[in-house]
Image (cartoon, rainbow, N blue to C red; front, side):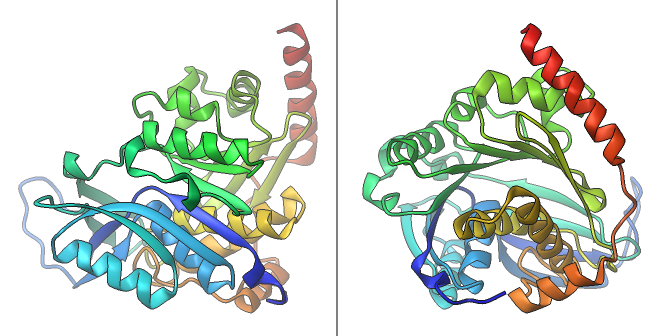
Length: 331
C-alpha cells in the first residue's frame, strides 16, 4: 500500500488519553496472595490518543483534542504527541491529575486487566471545544466517556458532512444522545447487549442501527475478529493468528485502522480486514502503542492469510441478514 497522498487526509480525535503503568505478571494473582512482577513500564495510552498516533504514523495528518492535568502524566502526554507529530489541542485542568491506568498483563496469554483512575476535573466539557478543530477533517473519532462534549464534536462534524466513528466500550451516561450523531459506532462485544438487552448480535446490531440511523455498526470479538451490520448485510472479518504478548490497545489501534481506511475511501470489508491486522500486530509487543506496524507490515500479515477460527459461516451470515431485514420491515 502506498503512502502517496496520505498526508493530504486529516483525521481528528476527541477523547481519552491515559498514562499507563504496565505490570507484566507470570499469571493473574489470586486473592490474598503475593506475586513478583516480571517487569514494569510507564507508557502513553488512551483510546482516542493512541488511534491518532497510529493514523499519524501511517501518513495521515492527525489532530487530537484532549484534557490533562498539570502533572507529570500530562507532561508525558504532551511530549509524546509532539514527538509523534500529532497536532494536539490540550485543555489543561490546573491542580488536577491526568488519567492513569495500571495494566496487569498475564505473561502466559497476553491478556490484560486494566485498573484506572480519572480525576473528574479532566472530563471534557462541551465548552472546552472549538469548532475550528473539527473543520477540514476526512473523519472524526470520538469515544463514549465524556458524552456531552463528544456529541457536540460529532454534531459539528455531521453539519460539515464529516463521517463520525465512535469507540464504545461501556454504557456511559447519555450515550444514546451521542449515538444519534455517530455514523460508524464500533463497540466492544459486551456493549450491544448492555444497550439493548439482547444477547444475540444478529438482533442487537440491526436494532441499534435502526434506532440511531447509523451507516454501519460493528462489534469487535477479540481474537475472532469483527462482525458488522450495514443495514443490508452482515460483514465478518476473522482475526489473525499471532503470538499475543499484550492485548492492551488492540481496540485503539483497530479504531485508528478504521479511520485510515475510511479516509482512503476503501470498501468496508477491506477496512475491517486492515483494522484487524493492525490491531493483531500491536498485540505482539507490550503497551497500548507497543507495535503500531507499518503499512507494509500490515499488508504482509493480510497476505499470509493466517486467520483465527471463523466464528460465522457465509451461510449463517446470509440467513441472519435475511432475518434482520424481515424484522426491520416489520418494525
